[in-house]
Length: 377
Image 1 (tube, rainbow, N blue to C red):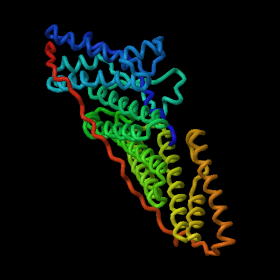
Image 2 (tube, rainbow, N blue to C red; image 1 turned 45 degrees about the vertical axis):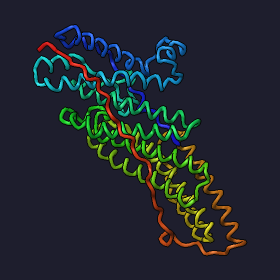
Image 3 (cartoon, helix red, strand yellow; image 1 turned 90 degrees about the vertical axis):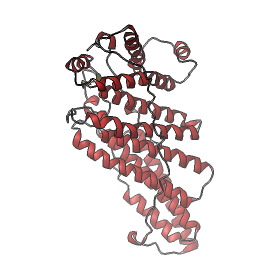
């Protein structure tokens, strides 16, 4: 599986809620202070700090993975934030509340913005004076961290990895349909891509594709039939095709969206289309159709774009797959020349790839701490 860590590289500026919102009673003041305290943990993610691994592990209750520790910080903050958003929504039209929210100066970086890659003055921070922006970006961050954890456990536990990718997909689905639509009226083409529903839909489909890739890895371990593996790999291609459609929509909404995201989708799609052709060729060869098997391998290699963008590590995986396909083609052609003597059909006489999508989201259920907040208005 190709690696793309950029979505998890979000950073933010400090917020102190009790310095901005005016509390009517001591209980509300304590809740605002707790909210600020929990946000400090979020603010420290992706920042260089002097906390040792041992102290971080003790503070998190024994969690050894940095990624798990960061997820815990977000999970402790989210219910309190959801509660604040719910209460402020009820009185959000009050000019004082609007002014308070503006004074929070909610600012986040955007690792999916092109300008983030070429900013010599350090990361660019985007400010939107809406609590839904804070909730949206924190949820985006949460999904990205779960996805990053899924990538880390991939080498040790395929079942857990697939489950985490599906969980991340559920976060992004919820974000795209329940939270971010309320921000559309205040977004501009210069805004952060992470605040748009279309980019969350892209991430939802990427996570589903990655969950299916892990499922395929498990199926390969069990030596599942080549024909089914071909369909599962092409199901991954179909998911990435859907992600491309949402990326195209996002590119119309965001002038600054990074092309690296599309490069990742494109490279991943090509890799799994190649693998689908390889397994289909092996399947038809097993059925005694050597000519068709050779034709499929030739077609696959001819379709590959050799000038794909993206990271060097992605192109290395693609080149390795192409080398494997080339070796298999050479082997089949040699075998056909001396044993089978079958005619190789032209492209339009070859069977089409068929896809099977089996990965589904694990729905995200927000946990709200039902606490009354009394603001002085």
